[in-house]
Amino acid sequence: MNPSRDDSTAAVSVPQVPDFDLARPIGEGGFGQVWLAINRATGQPRAVKVIPRARVGSRDPAGREVAALARLEAVRRCCHPNLLAIHHVGETSEYLFYVMDLADDLSGQTDLTSPDYRPATLENRLAAGPLPADECERYTKQLLAALACLHEAGMVHRDVKPANCLLLGGELKLGDFGLLTAANLAGSRLGTLPYMPPDGCVDARADVYGAGLVIYEMLMGLGAERFPSLGDRAQEIAKDRRARRLNRLSLRACDPDPGRRFRDAREMLGELTAAENAPVRLRRTGWIALFAGMAMVAVLAMFWLHQNEPASMNFVTEPYEATIYLDGQLLRAPDGNPYRTPCTIRGLSAGNHHVVFEWDTVNDTDDAPAVEHRLDAGVIDFAENRQIIVRLKSR
Image (spheres, rainbow, N blue to C red):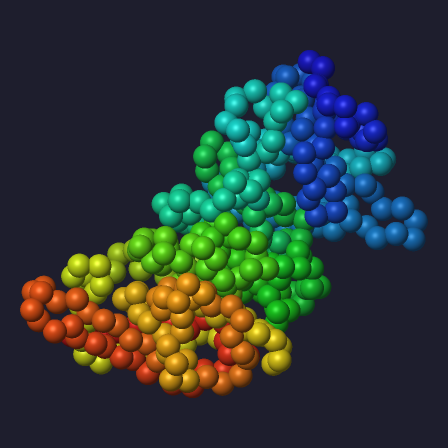
């Protein structure tokens, strides 16, 4: 079967590997290219990653990839349904190559050899916008299950990002193991910069950090560089319990202090499962919750800002629909209406600010007075925090 080639392939030097005709490049991975390939014997389409072999005086990306694949193959229990399967590893005098399953087509067509084929990576999927909460939750569980398998085997992926999450048969598969290393080694600071934790750790918490950003991108439809802004998704997130759970999971996973992150993906997955099974204790009357009693405040330091730069702050409350007072002044949107949580407010001055939240509770009878609840979050340093979470504890 002769593979289809589009016009752009003519200018590309096509690698020659045994048993496969390479049709066209469909992605980059680590130190090599991923090609749409056709098996000459069966006519089946596959993805083939091709890495140039080292030249004299150059780096050895192929050798690094081989070492990573050898680590993966040595641990047989890493054959997990959410880890992309590698069917064959081979080499020529010019290249190292290995053969993988081909991702679904982004548009849903079944002919994966079509010139219009685009791989259904999570990165390509998110180009159309954020995912529904149920889909986001399902992919989160699958990603964390794949990472948990690696972490339990004593390995870290080091390049968790949407481009390395492929969709096959509607299931998420984590791929590209070129930076895989043992968790107990003092590994180099490698990866994709926006998904690397600021502390430079190379253990399982680095994968947790990357997974947190992947969850954020699925929820918000924003790039990792926008974390932790809620963008225009604040109200949608507030109205969906699953989305709120995932947002909290992402925030803890991406805490700049590695000691406050999840230790590994297994703990992170366990937290999500426990949150799903927890009883719902918050009830709403009308469109605003009725709450009373003592308040519990959790303030999370969720990113870094330069001292003199304007701050972009997330304000998240449970229940939501709280107004915000900053240094005694009610914060208002450009249209004059008060901001209500959850919301992202940009342009706030960095430094210390006294933050108070206030709820106007609607009563069941029209003649009963409204009950106000105030929660004093104290003085918050906006140069060190990008997210404030407060929660009223019901009686």
